[in-house]
Image (cartoon, rainbow, N blue to C red):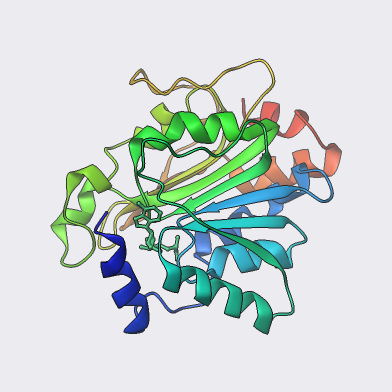
Length: 243
Ligand SMILES: C[S@@+](CC[C@H](N)C(=O)[O-])C[C@H]1O[C@@H](n2cnc3c(N)ncnc32)[C@H](O)[C@@H]1O
């Protein structure tokens, strides 16, 4: 990531000012019903707060973290405009001493921020049964102008599947062209610790592969299986519908 003062300047210049959540988060909404009432959520590198505030609007108790003072000021403002409350915490997520707590959250959400050493901490921060919703750019982003250029900040093909291979994958999507990105919704199951080392991509959960011109979706019969499972029960049934 570029340095924090760069981000402060970018926010002051009106960059990343949108309040609309990423469509991937909106599509993941149905999975939120797996979470207990009063669930807690962590929004990593929250920027101007579009995801943190949307999650607060869904009834979650949200902690938003970012290194940028300007980002957090915007998050507070956006929450205030909606009459919502978001707890904001200034944190350098790339610091070696960063601490996110143990089993403190039911949901960890991260968009357009990648610092690989954080992944074991995210796993630790999630309660069993909790969800991760994560999306960021892939190396295929390099084929189009704009966006991050440093591979350190770009996902490798299928990397999210490897990073969350100990979780039950509920949704995995890749956009292969333009603003190429990958997104995952995965659930921490009580019996399967996550494996954050490189390894094979899990077969589990990958039920179908459908392609469009610009989008490859490993959405795993997502809409049908998800809503059927969610209607049938809370808890593990929904993930096993895909597993
Ligand atoms: C591309 S923006 C994404 C913002 C938000 N997640 C979204 O999708 O709207 C990246 C964010 O990462 C934050 N960031 C960059 N480096 C960081 C670090 N070391 N620790 C915490 N936040 C950082 C920036 O301040 C910025 O808000």
